[in-house]
Image 1 (spheres, chains in turn brown, cyan):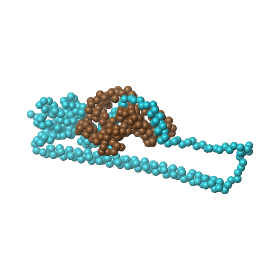
Image 2 (cartoon, rainbow over the protein chains, first blue to last red; image 1 turned 180 degrees about the vertical axis):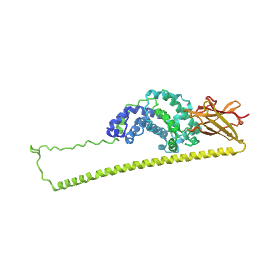
Image 3 (cartoon, one colour; image 1 turned 180 degrees about the horizontal axis):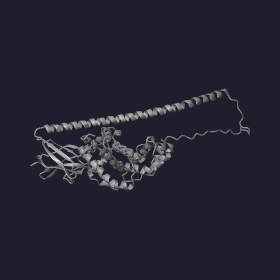
Image 4 (cartoon, chains in turn yellow, green; image 1 turned 60 degrees about the vertical axis):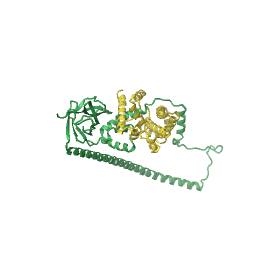
Length: 183
Length: 292
C-alpha cells in the first residue's frame, strides 16, 4: 500500500497524478464502505466523489501527520455516509442538533499506533465475525459505529440503560479483537 | 489516578474507540488517558478493531465512469502547479540583418522605467529576506504559543479530573464513614483464595439494607473480564454486581442485595466476562462465610 505520506511529498508531486493514484488504490474501499452504510449506489458514488474532492481541497496540509491517507479517506467516508443517511431519514436523535454536528468523529490513533491497511482475508474474517456476534452486540456496534450514535443516543434508541449498551459495545469489540489477534 | 476514581471511566475506552462519545465526553476521556495506562492499552487494542471495521465492508466495485467524474471534478479544484519560468521571445521576421537588429535610440521613459525596476529590485532584495526572517520568527512563536496553550489546556483538564475523582473519593469515604458509624452495622470478611492469595475484602451492611464492599489486592483482570460478586441464595448463587479494580488492585462498590436475600450470607467473587453471567463460571478469587 503506497500512500501520499507527507505534505512534502504531496507538495512536490503533481496533484493530478497523485489523485489518480490515490483513487486507483482506494476507491473500492471507499465506495464499499459508503455502500455498506447508505445502501444506495447513487449516494455512495456522490460520497466517493465528495471524499476525494475533500482530500484534494482540504487535506493537502494535513495528510498523514497523524494517520494514513487510507484511514483518513475511510474515516471521512464514514462521516459523510452517516450525514447522508441522517439527512435522508431524520430521526428524533438528530432532529435536535444540526446535521454537521451529528457525526461523532473517530479518535485519531496515537502516533505509536499507525493505522494499518488490512489484508482482504483479515477484513473478510472480521466481517464474518461481526455477523456472528450476538444480535444485541452487533446492533449496538452498528448503531454507534456505522450510524454515529453516541452512548446516550444509543441507550435511548435501544431503550436500555447506558451501562448495558456500554457493556454490549465493549464485549462485541473484544470478541472482534480476538479474531484479529488470533490470526 | 486515585484508587476509587476510575469508576466514571469504566467501559469508556470501547465507546471512545467506537466513536460513541460526544465531543465533551471525548475531551474528558482524552484527559483521562493522560493518567490511565490501563485505558490507553485498551483503546490501543480496540482501535485495531474499529480501524478494521472501516475495511470490513463487502467489496463492491463502482461504475468505471466514477473515476472520470472524480478526476474531472476534483482536477478543477487542484491549484495549478507553478508554470516553469521561461522567457518568451518574439521573433521579428524580415527585420533582422546579419549584423543583428537595427539599433534604436533609448527613449527617456525607458531609462526611467529601467531605473525604477533596478531600484525596486534592490529594495526587494534587501527587504524580502528580512520579511522571510520575520515570518519564520513569528511562525516559531506561534508554534510555541500553541504548544503552551495545549499543555495548559491538558493540565487544566487533568486537574479537573483529579478534582472530580477526589470529590468522588471523598463522597465514598463519607459513605463508608457514615456506614461504619451507623448502629447495627455488620461486617463480613472475604479472604483471598489460591487465585488471589493477597486479596481481601470486607462487606458492610446495615439494617436498612445499604451494603458496601471494599476490596484490595485484587489481581489485574484479563481484557474483557470483570470481577463479579455473588451472594449465597437459597436456590444458588445470586449476582450482586460487577466491578473492576483500579491499577493498584482496589475496588469499592455498592452491593445490590435482592429483597429475597437476608443478610448475612456467604459471598464470593469470581472473574467473569464483562457482560456478566447468571451463574458463576470462573474460579473463586475471594470467599466469605458468615460466622455461625
